[in-house]
Image (tube, rainbow, N blue to C red; front, side):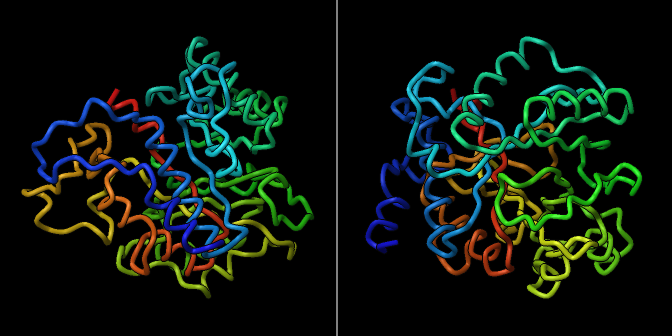
Length: 326
């Protein structure tokens, strides 16, 4: 990609508020378009570093259309920037109510957008939250009947590797594209593993076509190494799988390497209030360049670390952050 074009994609349409943590958010910001622009910038930078880099935003599927209506005009720039979408709580666990069916009205709102994305060649990855065997089976069946790829999480913390008996059968296929994935593991909190070596070994022997994991194990200054990623690259039958790293782009996390100690009392201008449901998470003005600089565009950015570690792509969380500002 031409570097001038990349610079334009990373910098275009970036509006800045006064750099004062007490300044109100300007009323003329199109929060949905700013999120599209952020995802497109992540995609442009990731694919600049690796032309085959995979981009999967989670939730916020309604920004696929310009007006937020399923029959509305497609946001083609955004559509072209992504390879698939993740959707939580489609059938179970909506609004953090694990083991409860998602209200029909909510599922009915999500499905037309997911169907539209699927019709436009995007893979749909669904994470439902229930540890009830009957509900797990129903959620998996609902997804598979629609051509969606399910992961049924028994815990909201996403810290458990399902027992071998509950894992999918090995597909016997090399998985090199997202549209080939038939199963995935979503595990981003490895604190329940005895140590780093046990964590890597456990993931390596799992059957999943795609591993969605964190760049880090426990020491946030020490990302997974290229050697560790290589151990995870192949399934037990020797076939290849995809490795996708988690990255929150709509919230800052106080346990990440980029966090500065004085932010606890003197937050930067782009940081908003705490997320009351997740300790250590803070809403951010995701359109601000200083926040984007932490994520992309330079050798110290989060995405550069993900690419350097050898991941195939990135899973972008809190894409629906625009709802906080609307």
